[in-house]
Amino acid sequence: MISYFQSDITKYKLLIIVVKNYFEDNLITIEDTVNLLPQKISSRAHKLNCITDATIRNYFTKEIKASDQRIKYLKPSNELIEEFKEYCAIFDL
Figure 1: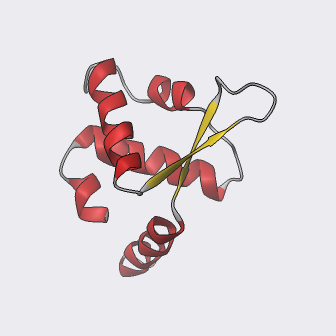
Figure 2: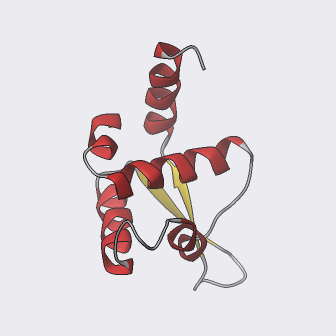
C-alpha cells in the first residue's frame, strides 16, 4: 500500500495528512484534506482523483457525518494503519 502512495507526490502528501490526523484523533473532511495539499503540486481534480482512487482500493475510508450527510471524513483503513506502522519502524520513528 505504501508503494502506491510513493508513486506520486500528491499521493504521498495525502497519505501523510490523513495518517497524521488519524494519529492525532482529528477527523478531517475531504474538503479540508484537499485544501491542505499545496496548490502548486497538482490540480484540485488530480487531488480528488487520488482520494477517490485510494478509497476504491480500500486504502482510505469515507465516513459520513450523521447530522449532515454532505460532509465526509477521510480516514485510513486498518490495513493501511498497520502497514504505515511497519513502514515507520524501518526508520525508528
